[in-house]
Length: 216
Image (cartoon, rainbow, N blue to C red; front, side, top):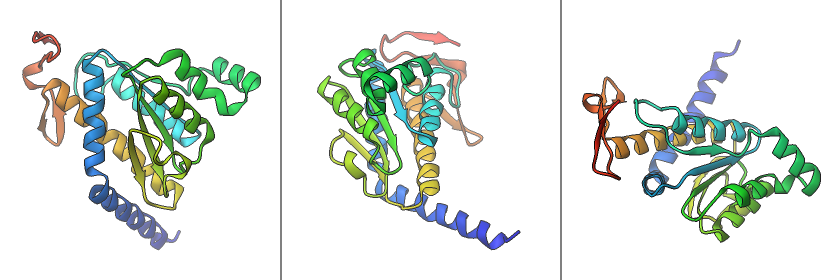
């Protein structure tokens, strides 16, 4: 086994992540703030992607509904990639390009955050769904790769990983999604970093929406 290839691929990933840190930091912070505002206003997050990006969408939603690094209340997030009956019915009746748009039209509302993940930026079904979401008054986020493809310039917040390797883009995407989860938890529930992880302070959180404090 050629260990040089392992080193090469890890070096490529490090370079991509260094670029993300340099170029996308402000955008990631803005995205986290947008999600926090939406959740505090009683809105939800909808996420979608194809293939590996579908798995990332489900992963991201699960971190909010379950937990990321701290014990806190569940947060409303929904992956649009999981209901096979909807996906196959819409795909069969309307075409695959409509599978996410139709769900956005049914499930999203003004002020919701709709996140589309596409390593190429050229996924037609993501593009159509994000256009529909924006027309409905949702806040749209594109987690993209390469030059952003056809989705670039059409979303409220664009996070484009400027790399050409699909695996490296996907790895950067999951890093960004994990960072977003941590930032949202910290902002909403007053977490502090202990032993390199976010932990709830005194096993309590302060609900900034209501001003009440509750024990977990």
